[in-house]
Length: 108
Length: 270
Image 1 (cartoon, rainbow over the protein chains, first blue to last red):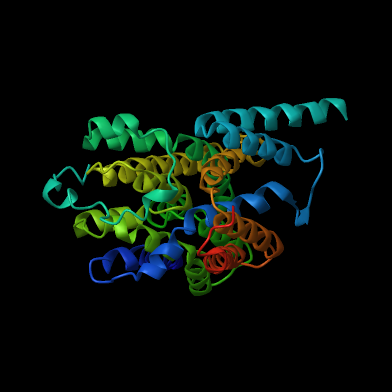
Image 2 (image 1 turned 30 degrees about the vertical axis):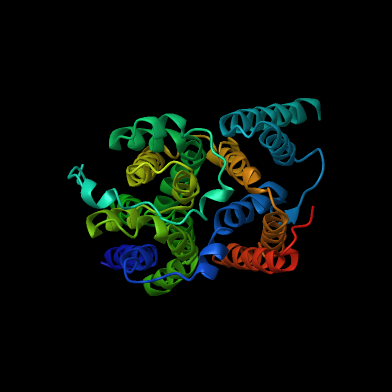
């Protein structure tokens, strides 16, 4: 019974947040100022997710060649900057990350 | 497929009329979509474009299935949570709270706070989805995740005015959804046999994908400042509970961007 309440409650809470703007979207009018601020949402949110993901490990910041995620991320930034090719960025970033990680475990 | 009815009369109007959304986009995958728009092509392109993020989510789905059942949630409830809640972060937090015997109401309230960031995604999508009928808005809202938003907003911001971009949304979001269900099942059934999924490094796929999505935005100084501020604030506030750090970083980043836009105008700094 508690499980039903838990899942029902979580489902309602989550859907309410996801839906409220969609449901009201034909009635609400976003001001030009807000619309231009919203252009920042995708890059800002994505970098707020990525930066801690890459630099933090167990709550502390790791900067240096021992952090394979950081090395992979730098490779990805470079590839994306020079090629603008998303798929290539993903493939090279992952390859550098895995390669660096296994090099670290084998050499150290 | 509950959405097989055609909504072409409404969906032709579903693109935004203002051109201001397009100036930041720089996309490469949309060329063939622009040539011959079709609902199914959009659908499959969406499902294809989200694959790297689907891969990145695999270990988390498996770990969730394992963790939740270990922490006292029944297998049926674990499956139901993935099927009806479909929100990775809050599912993880719920599983963690169950381990320390937290009451359901507190878990529900926490879920609400953890998911607040979806408001920001939904508002950003409003200009693009507002013409759709409710039969579309309900499933698209239900399937909204960080990953779906990241992929879908790129499609909506792209130059072409294809009328079926909501099908792209559906394809991407549904691929994410099905993968999450599958991985939850894997975690429940085989979780004990699968060696430490957290150490595979597959989750890094999300980071490189997001990096590849962010870099093309960095054309003007306000955007660079916004992204740098967001990253720094996220790093400094990472210890805040319930993903509030992410929310704070997003708001501060947007604020920094808007303020520096004012500072750099009218003559843009060369």
